[in-house]
Image 1 (tube, rainbow, N blue to C red):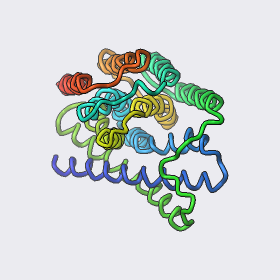
Image 2 (cartoon, rainbow, N blue to C red):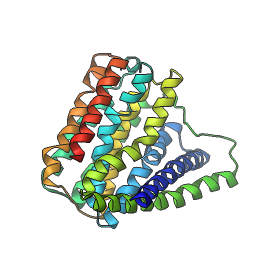
Image 3 (cartoon, rainbow, N blue to C red):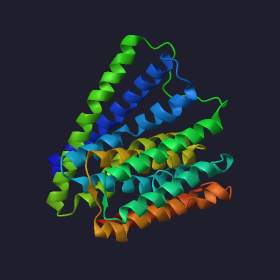
Length: 308
């Protein structure tokens, strides 16, 4: 058990650093090739920051643990709302009211309903993945058309980065991501066997929290510096990519059965967490410390419920 936890922790650390390296390398390569910053933001950065979750999901399916992949995505979306927004709000109020996220939120809400509808069939298969990816492509195209002319600041962009350094970042990312994913999945599935719980439950809890750590760390640091005003938009974007991009690609690798218990509980918890964002999106409410306590407590209660 201790060795398995060490595998999970090592895999998470490698995933975090490899994902960061891949984003830096890919962003600067794309800019060097002359791609507009907005296009890079909507594609390279978005997919790059989701690379750890994507690799974990693909590895889980290849290792015969598809429930872990599904649990990872749904659990990450729940954790992103309740944990990634809740804990930083305990430190300082997140001034989310100053940012208009209504359009992106409606996209995420529609993606959630579509994803749940597919899950109700009992198994996610290849054609579900194609539909999810086509919807994502449509959203990206609509966002690009609506955002043309806007200036975009790309984190990790260094115009003077040398070719050698760029190559190192790309190699570290491309080698580290599958290595970290393999360690994480191996450790998580072993823990599931030892505890006598399903891979889905481990995906919903341990793996989901682990793959949400980069978003949580970023938002906590932003809250400490009083610059967490874009946290809500980041969570919405991450959740949208999880449902459409990660699961879209994952089910092309292999079918993902949807456990009956999953249909009765976890999908609806994810949807309820999504609906909790309505006051912050449409009513210009900031996420205060009081909200932070409520969101964090709800996530703690959900973890207890999921594990029991």
